[in-house]
Length: 75
Image (tube, rainbow, N blue to C red; front, top):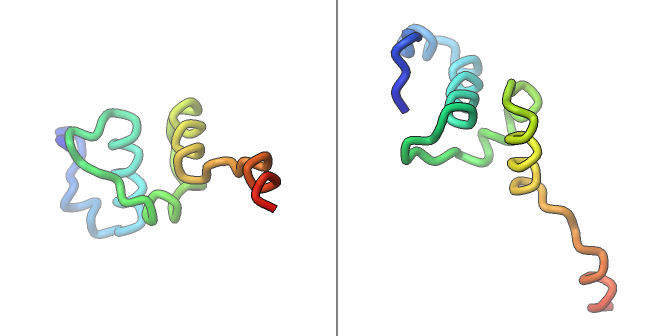
């Protein structure tokens, strides 16, 4: 990820703000081959300012719906 508009070294002095900023940048502007740590994403989920459609999709990946028909068949 490349960002020319922010001093990342200065922002790294505030670990939580840096983590939130980095997640928002990756999600909103592209990954450029970088992977997101799911535990960090879940930790800051409620503090992220991301596109609603991206939020919906990521939510589906992080917390998939339980298939009630599958669990009833196996009882």
